[in-house]
Structure formats: structure tokens, C-alpha cells
Image 1 (cartoon, rainbow, N blue to C red):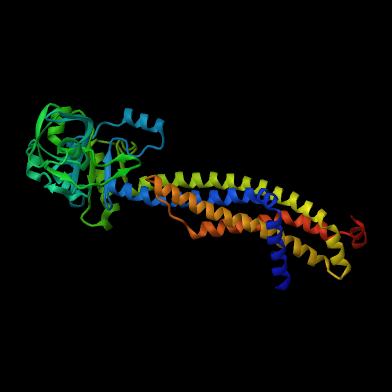
Image 2 (spheres, rainbow, N blue to C red; image 1 turned 60 degrees about the vertical axis):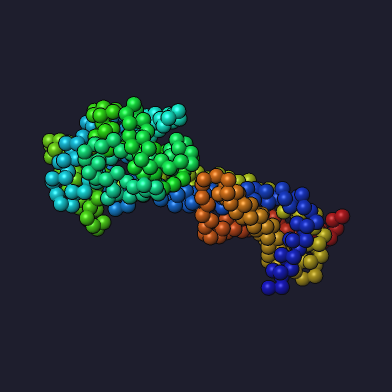
Length: 408
């Protein structure tokens, strides 16, 4: 134990006495560990952030049916667009009447339009048309006024729920409820303002207008594909409900057993799996880059430790003359190289924490610092110090004490 503490003390004294050399020695480790801590923290934070966003958009315990689903790439999306017919209200009716566990179905579609109030005009605001069941699905909660009623939606009344940001831009500090706005050349009465949601990936979630689906199709055309969201009566029935919905769509579209589905069907887990596959790929690339940095840092450590052994040849010879064994010399050099490498890991950990917290403070991206990433980073630097310090240690241990004492 005393030998270990003494070797650590010598290593720390060497770092302090040769600050620039020590910094260059552990620079690769600092960069590698900082990259591990920062990137892992951001990836884990993004997993939580994206997961919440996907659940918000798709809905927990629900699934969606649309024209293309979640294509694996641009080519697959183009093929699906050519092959698959649009999803229509006839598909909606086929789903509702097929099985009790797919009876709660919401249809929606969207388009961009200008919204005007007096002399203020907002360009290309996202307009969402929804069916009467939309209140049974999460996503809308009026902070002012109320939500459009199912009866107003069914009868295609010219009413609108607008986002918080849309209301602020159009009405400033005035109450927007019961005011008339012009949307795509048609007057709509504002019945409510949705609660503030903030931004998602830098895009505002509060700049929109919700109107009856029938009014949207009157304004922008009925030949548009719908998105159908299905909510089973019990989340435990989600898989069974998806199979029932798939069967209903295939029967409606008269698909033979050998034919593939010509529609997309997915849950929030489907989209989340794609994101996790992407994040795993990004992490694998990170490990490759970090490994390269550690190898370069290890080579630097080995070369500088060889130089240190040369500088301390007389000291090593004296220790051997006084009875130090080969393993004592190996232990001393390995302890010094590992201690120096760990110092780089500790500095890199601190810098990685700082980088992750700075990104979290000045961008919408969250940071979730993981303990295992700290252990991984420090463990890798310790192994680098041991591995690349082994050759200098063996060389020092094999020095002839008589020849070593003759060195000037």
C-alpha cells in the first residue's frame, strides 16, 4: 500500500513539475473522456426528449394509420407514395364498423394557410382539420375559452381553436375568444386558445389553428390523404386492436392474402425504435472516434514514459542496487503512467460535464448525465495507462544497475 501511495505521489509531483509535458501527455485522454461524457449525456437526454415528443405527437396507447407509415428511407417513401392509395373517410367508416376495439378513431389532415385579423396577417400557419373524436385523444387543452364541440365538428361549423403563439401574434394582449378571423378567405370564430406548449426541435408547437375536418376539405380540397388515430378501450388490447384494424383495412381495399399492405400502420414505439437505432449508430461512431483518440493518447504516454525512464536511469539503478526487485520497478512505472492517464480522465470528465450543461443551458437539447459513462471513461483511461505504460515499465525493470549508475 505504501509503495502504491508513494508511486502516486511521485506521479503527481511529476505532473506539477512538468505541467506542459504532462498536459500534452494526457491531452488525448482528456479529449476522449470529454467526448464520452458530453455525447452520452446528450444522447440520453435526446432519447427522453424525443420519446416525450413522439408520445405527444402519436399518443401513448394509440396507433396510427396513414398512407405511408414510417418509411425506412427516401426511396421507400417514394415507392409507398406511388403504390399506396390515399386514406379516405371511407376507410374511417370501415374501421369504425369492423370491431368494438377499433371504434374510437380520429381522422385528421393538415395544410398551410394565411390567417388574418383586421390588418394583421400571419402567413403559412399550420391548419389542422380534425374529426369529432379529437377530444378523446391527447394534445389539445384550452387555456382560454373552450375546445370546439363534437357537434360543431360534425356540422362543419366555422369555429377554430388557435395556438398560444398564433393568438399572441394576431391579438397581442386582447382576448381572442369570440373574435372573427379570416382563414383561407373564410371567416371563423375563435372559440378557444390552446395552452402553451413551447418548441420541439426548434419548431414552435403553438402556431396553429384547429378547425373541423369537413371545413378543411372544403377549403383545400377533398382529394387529400387522412391520418387515422385509433385508441383501443384498454391499452392491453393495443396489439389485438392493431391486427383488427389491419384486417379491416385489407378487407376494405380488397387485398389478397399474398399482397402487401398498401397503407402504413405504426405506434409511438415504432418511431421510437427508429430513433434508438439512429442513436445506437451515433454511439458506435463515437466509440470509434474515442478509441482512436485513446490510442493516440496512449502512444504519447508511452513515448513520454520512455523519456522519463531515460531521465531517471540513475535513480532506477540506485533503487535496484539497494535491493529493489524488477516487479517493484514495473509497479512504480505502471502506477505513474496510470495515475497520469487517470488525471486526464478526471479533467476530461469535468470538461464533459461542463460541455453537456452548457448545451442544455443555451439550446433546447436536454442533458442526462449517466454514471456509467463516467465509469466507462475513467476505466478506459486507466486501461490505456496500464497498457501503454507496460513497455516502458519492463524496459526500466531490465536496466542493469551497474550500467545505470554509470549514466550521467
